[in-house]
Length: 136
Image 1 (cartoon, rainbow, N blue to C red):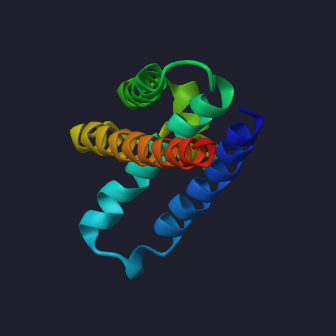
Image 2: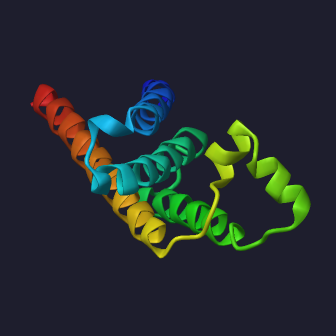
């Protein structure tokens, strides 16, 4: 389990780096990629954060936590008190809290968690298959 947590800890900054690259180099990508990929990666990152923090919890529960976190942050964007708007004006605030509510972000989060969850399951199942074949 320790190796698995280390792998998750490695995946998290990789996803962050890819997400920042997508935001910084928007001219490299199509409008639809720019619109959805960053949000999908953001949600996938939360899945791996929860996987690192709670590796013994069921995969579906961790995916649910990731989706709930992203959805809450998205709906929090409807709150526009001056103090939170000042926080959102900073780079960390903009990256963590976003800037405006979009229903399309909800879809992107769902796709991001679904893809990351599926990839994680395939990867874990393949590791289990290799380990089982070594025992035979």
